[in-house]
Image (cartoon, rainbow, N blue to C red; front, side, top):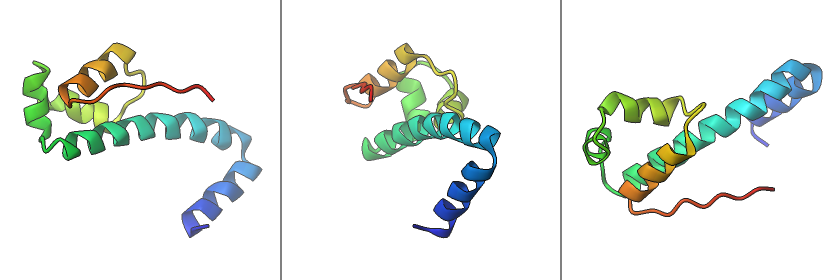
Length: 91
């Protein structure tokens, strides 16, 4: 376990509000990271992806860095533009 993981674990145990917010925030962060990784694997810049989606580079940046409240249809469009399929798993 890294120092960061230890800190997060300790903080979650002593601060229930942080723990609740962390999980939600982490999931939103993870979506943005996955989309960014897929874009880079496709060899595209944010600007190139934006052109494919007929949007602005700032919209791609916002999706990758602040993915909260992102519509499922938007994620599907991004995935399709990157030549990927969207899979959703409930656990």
